[in-house]
Length: 162
Ligand SMILES: [Zn+2]
Ligand SMILES: [Zn+2]
Image (cartoon, rainbow, N blue to C red; front, side, top):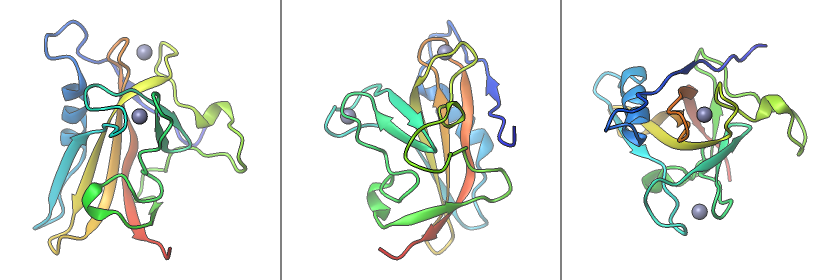
């Protein structure tokens, strides 16, 4: 398998266990560029309200369980302040697996080690010193058992013609 997702056990049973866990994972994983900054946020869904929204994840995109609206990780609408079309390029670590065609292969659908397939999602946006969005990372947290993984590892954001 060319893209092995590494899961780590979450802080099960700790009072703070929750989406903060996955923010911590991203904070440790994502380095700001010199002069740049990193913005971390827990993914929410406007139509479904804030709170701990759960997402289905497939082919590198996250879909709200309540309304199926995608976050826009792979095509550029994940960040409210940078809503332009983009595509992602690998910056070393492979991008999440995505089989060709509209259907889904099992490898397209990440599962935690216990087999759960709904997740809390946190996103890290890395901005360069000039304020341009350069990179995106996505962390997943299983709400059932707290397992964590870095799903998108510092993918480069490349503007794409609309
Ligand atoms: Zn929703
Ligand atoms: Zn799980």
